[in-house]
Amino acid sequence: MKCKICDKLLGMPVSRLAWWLLVIASLMSVADLTFSLLNFTLLLRVSFIVFAVFKASALYLVLKLCHNRVLRAVYIAVLVVFGVLAIVNFVGFAIYGTGISRRMIAIFGETTANEVGEFFPQLAGNLAMMLHTPSMLWIAAIGAALAIVAKLLKQKAFNAMVIVTIIAGLLVSACFASKIQVWGKVNLSMYARVVSYIRAYYYEIKALEELLSQRKPFPDADKVSSQRLAGNVVLVIGESALRRHHALYGYSLPTTPRLSALSDSLVVFSDAIGSSAATNDNISRILTFRRDVDSLAWYNYPSMIELFKCAGYRTYWLSNQERGGLWSNCSAGIALTADVVNYVGTLSSEDYLTLRHDEMLLEPLRRSLADTASHRLVMCHLFGSHVQYRYRYPSSHDYFNADSILRRVPRSFLTRDMAQTIAEYDNSIRYTDSVVCCMIDEVRLCREPSVLIYFSDHGEVVYDDSDFCGRCRECAEVPMVVYANGAFRRRFPHFVEAFMKARNLPVTTANIVYVLMTVTGTHYPLYDATLDFLSHEFTPAIRYVDETPWEKDIAKSEKHSEK
Image 1 (cartoon, rainbow, N blue to C red):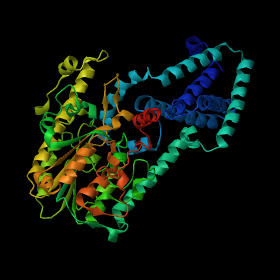
Image 2: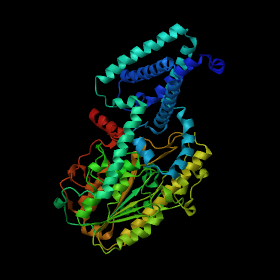
Image 3: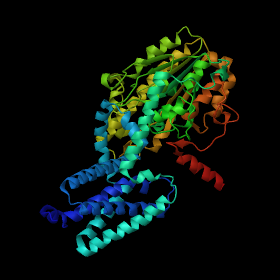
């Protein structure tokens, strides 16, 4: 089969072009395996490439042997969908560090219609950066080499090459089938991935519906006891705030003027990380006994909210985020078990409020602390620094601009548009600083011993070291501060001392439940002192982000071993 356009532009017949396109798509479909950060051997990475070429050749051979018009049309449609999925997989991995996975399906499912509109402009800006990634360069090099081969080989030689790649691929496939790989065999097929992960997410959503409709009893509720030491515990969960953008941690711009002014009254943790680069995975650990190493779904673990309800605390969930995305949001299934639930902005994608700011949480917090309940656990979920950053703060907090960034944060690759984006992100950090300090003011006025803990769920990289803007594993590094009011400091000086001793320890927000149990004097069989940084039994260990070891902990461990 020949095509004049293909012959003129690419110098090869359309059938060979089809094979070449299938090879490119197949390479993209396994790019996240080939270039994975996991400790794969070179042989295994080469095997992925061989398997990709085998898959392309096998698909091409079926296409050549399919002569029925209807079947051929259907098969071509299947290949086109495969190509689209492969592109999504590659772009997701090259830009955001994750290909098609359960996490990506969950993010799609929990993304609101408005967030989709905000996401695409950022994606368009990141596509140019993707062209310089190692995976893109390797695929371009392999694609160019195979294009030359496909163009120069005579037909018999080309057919022989297709057969050889199929045979080699069958041998590699046999090796894959003979052992259980850490990356999972399902990842070799785009269709299998999508079906498998959508199915898993579907069951997770069904579990959410079951939780909301039946409210399963908290396990071993009769074994919960509490001295109810702290009268008020306020847990403030930020959004997308990266530690390095806080002046409190040495950032060059004054993004945290109020927290910095209060630094003598705060315990500032220098090495806190979240357990994921995604909000939902973080929240599902913060609000349950699910540890950072646990891979089972959130509904398999007891809820922190239910724990404190059993301990005699009235629980409040105050949120400026949506309760559900286009499908739903699993963290809502946990939060909705609180005694008082208040989504101050919206309940769903259908009634999304375009402009809403976190100061809307201040009045509900004030009312919660003035409630007649004698002991309270108040959880505040901020919208923080979620994209688009310029919508996260009122115009009165439009403090930084592109000139501020270009003058104070010199980076050779920065364009004016990039600098403006950084300015908007830093403005959102500065606004969060104001909101958190207003919350601290409310806690300061409490007569009861009260403590406030603030940290972000994850961060966001905004042209910090390159022309990349978005989420990656570095986004796990988050700010974390603790404020105790005068009544708490006077009655529990040993807790204040324990916080101070722990401020430079490697901690993860996934274990915050154990800390809250200590400051409230709550006892439950699942308490683990080795995970509680206030306990003298606390044992620093390698932390996990998205269920894989945190690289900086591994580096510290190796450095310590060398000594």
